[in-house]
Structure formats: C-alpha cells, structure tokens
Amino acid sequence: MELRTWMKLKGITQKELSYDLNIRQATLSMILSGKQMAKTDLAAKIEEYTSGEVTRMDMLYPESYNDEIDLSLGTPLTRSLQKDILNRLKTINKKNF
Image (cartoon, rainbow, N blue to C red; front, side):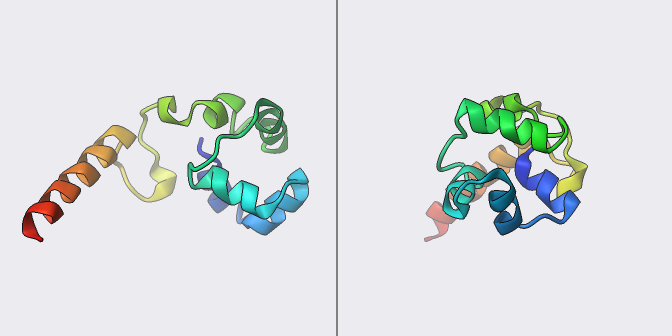
C-alpha cells in the first residue's frame, strides 16, 4: 500500500507522521510527492510503524508497486491505467493550446 493511502485511511497527518518517525516534515513531503526516495533504514522504520501495511518494498520500489486496484483512493483504476489517462490528457491539452 502507498504511504499516502495508509495515512489517509488512518487519519494521520504529515506533521504527526514526521514527528513519530523523527524526520523533518519537508523530507516526508518530498517522499510522498515522489521527489525523493526513502532510504532503506527509513523504509524499514515505516514498515514497522505501519505494522507491515506499508512495506519497505512499497517505499523503495514505488513504481513497481503491485498494479492492483486501489479502492481506498476512491477509484477502480490501476496505476498503469491512471498513467495512461494522464498521458493522453497531456497530449490533448498540448493539441488544444
């Protein structure tokens, strides 16, 4: 499961999680936005903190995150389908403008 999804399900804010993990909120924000990868020790810490609901593999290899339906995000689309739709929208927007 993605960390952001887990946080949403548990009602935990970035501020709370960063405090509990003893990391800067900016670091957590960068990880959640995909601008920075979690280091292995932090990924292990997150796995322990979430009781294994977010695995270190989810954190270390987010792009290979299993391509299952993630209903907790409120959509039945797989990640690959979501990416395909976003790419098509980008193409359409470039053509229209």
